[in-house]
Amino acid sequence: MRQAHSGAQIPLRMSISSVQQCFKRGRLQMKPPDQAPAASLSVAADRRLFQKNIRQSLIREANTMEPKTDWGPQDRETFTWDRPAAGPCFNSIINNPKLGKEMDFVRVREADSAEPYRDYADIEAGKEYEVYIYYHNNASASLNRIGSGIAQNVRLSTSFPPKICSGQTAVIKGTIRWGRPGSKKEVWDTALLIAHDTVYLRYVENSAAIHNEGSANGVILDANALFGSGALLAHDTRAWGIIPGGDEFAGYITFRIMVDK
Image 1: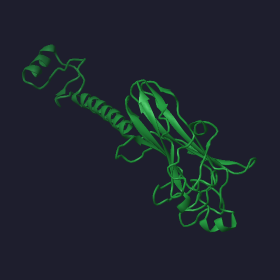
Image 2: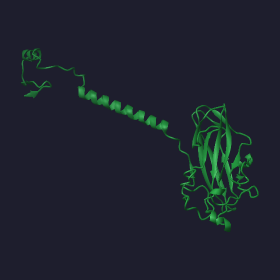
Image 3: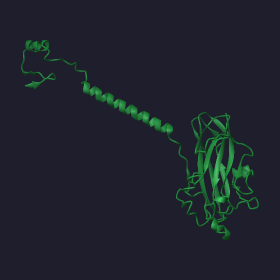
Image 4: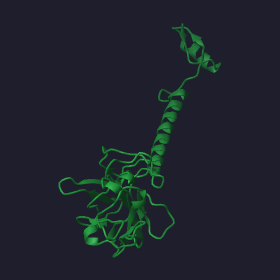
């Protein structure tokens, strides 16, 4: 005996009239050969729905994901707030109460806004954006009295491109260098500007200022040096290039970028 889809049993050999009688009585139902079973259609629909949900999930994740910035050297020794460095070293503390990880020391925001500084900014033509660059000699302040915690020839250099095409990202890079010739060290970090239209970027003249608790607070830095070989930093205007160790001698630099169409 052969089992039919309807559950009816039919002999292997049946007359045409017998088959016709089975159909009349509703015991057999013919299914067009090109019609897939309902279960197969359901599986295919579920698969399409699953793929659609995955695509939508990836799109949502991409839209909420923050752009990644670059910093370095990434293999440098790090320190904590309670265990500072044994000599001059910049922006390598991992738990700064004000900043968090000091390796993330270049940030940006729309100028004159109450927004916090971030690793990136979506920019628009006609607006100004303010760049923030933090510096902190991580040497223990107790070493300053014997001179071994004081960083010398400390310079900051920064750069950004003059143009961003639509849909592209521009990198603002800040590099802090210190030390004597032949033994100089450096750390760097980046922030990003994201453009949705083609725009041009320019430095706002005389906007680069140093901020700290010393006499150098508010001094305007030379733009040619800042965007070139590096502008000297200072806590005290009588000692440019000298930054002692400790939080009380830390500070930051801000400057502005104008976005033109």
